[in-house]
Amino acid sequence: MDSKRLKEWYKLTKPGIIYGNLISCAAGYTIVAGKNFILSRFLLILISTTFIIASACVLNNILDRDIDLKMERTRNRALAMNSIAIKDAATYAVILGTIGFSLISIYFSIATIIVGIAGFLDYVILYSYFKRRSTHSTLIGTISGSAAIVAGYTAYTDRFDLFALMLFISMTTWQMPHFYAIAIYRKNEYLKAKIPLLSVIKGIKRTQYESIAYTVAYSLSIFGLYYFSYIDTFFFVVMSLVSFAWIIFAVNGLSVENKNLWAKKDFKYSLYILLIFSVLSYSKVFV
Image 1 (cartoon, rainbow, N blue to C red):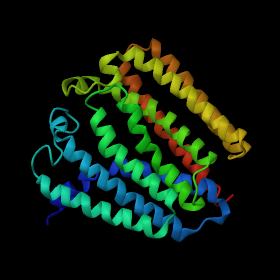
Image 2: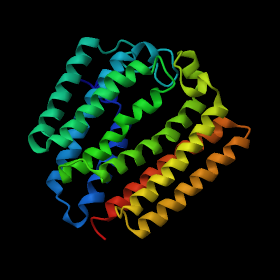
Image 3: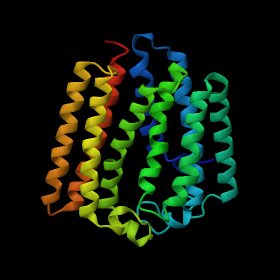
Image 4: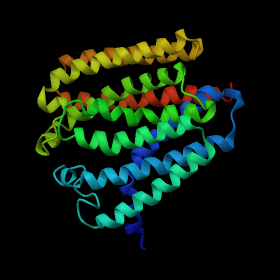
């Protein structure tokens, strides 16, 4: 198999989504493990998560191939172009999923297994279904997007508790503005593909107002983590400052004329926030 063909199979797993989820999964593990960090367990949850997410993404590519063909950023995907057979892609997804769920079942508790199954089913079934039918698909999709950080947490603790719930809420409220930014600057593409995102159905201004609400909710989730003593003062202060700046940027976006440019910057800023949160979580292992 030549390098071009290998690249197609690699892209079929949506590596960008995998990497983003691995960053949050690692944060979920390190934020609770701290100096009691166990490298082997850490690597196992990352590997398991990689295979499970890869499987879900391949299946999502199969289900969305007709939509992908209508959108500029996705029309060159292998399944949309028919360069990979659906049967082969489905086999690929089954193999990836089997490896991922086998690993997670062997090495981790029922809590982590449930989180993995929930995230998988949400992305493959619920999100894929509602993406074509409801403006609420974005919120539904955050369940799978928030599963990784919780999986990292339960991989260490073997339980789902208030801390896990707070991490889930934090990741969910972060994702909404993150994806709303994409929904704004990619609005025309989603409109062409007839995907009923909020920006398409209710307009950009409404999407911005909801985005502001979620950035405020994210800031409150950081306070909640601090209030219950899950993060220290330094962690809280840094995240409070960057999340407050995010709120200001979101509010200022209401008066900006070039919404697409603003939304692209908002998207990048959300990535910086995830990175800062993750680095602060990783630092607990060493500080």
